[in-house]
Length: 143
Image 1: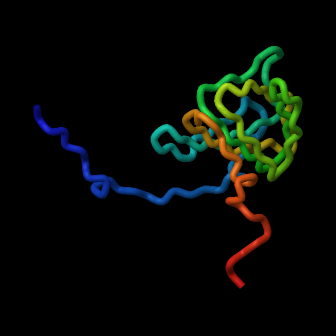
Image 2: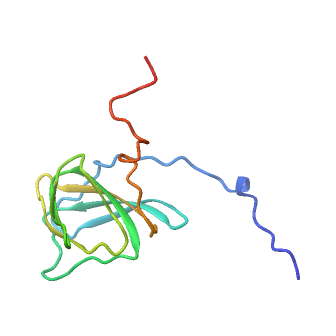
């Protein structure tokens, strides 16, 4: 059996990519905008811009992957099955494990609602690092 030759990862050009998450927003006249930013294996990062869109009546997202969402601008209300509603404003985030049924109840039109979504493979158990003592707010090792 012949040995599989894997390309040398250093032989591929790797480029730094950058942008502005709140730049080049759509005018709000159309559908939600989904902009893929980064993909690495099964992990992908998207910017989503909503301008008044909501989930259709009776529709619930039930995804096979985990989704971490941070709201960067605007406002939104999510319904989480069995847990009630979450009102989100700039700086708020939510981690939605795979198969956590949820829906978007509303999004602001002006300013547009800008989300940063990170999708990753379903984890058998999500770890909230804030409660695990790994993150300390307001402390720094630098003077």
